[in-house]
Length: 116
Image 1 (spheres, rainbow, N blue to C red):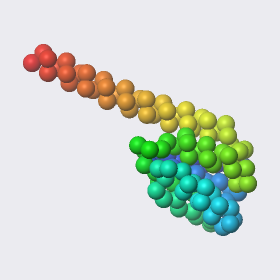
Image 2 (image 1 turned 135 degrees about the horizontal axis):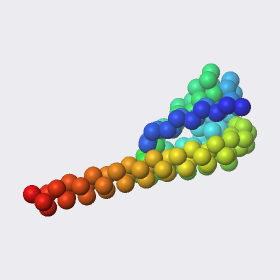
Image 3 (image 1 turned 45 degrees about the vertical axis):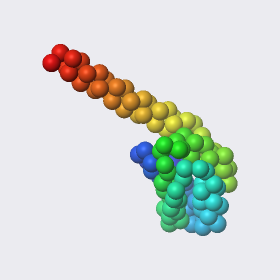
């Protein structure tokens, strides 16, 4: 099965075939996700099997949200546990790269300011 995951900090979209046309499972998933501190909104689309999670990136991480999804076998999510791990690693690399870039940029600005 193919799973689509799209992430930007504060927003995570996952398409789960097991949710397609399964409103009851979608509502169960929504309740489980809304119990996670930091998640502000969960939007379901039973037509596409998509769940969109809005979260406070200062309080929660995409990996923690994916962990909640992975613990829910009724939605067929455990089948892509390896994919979730890879996505979590990509998210971590993305965050680390941006932190490194910000630190490097500040260092260069400080060095130029010191020279002037």
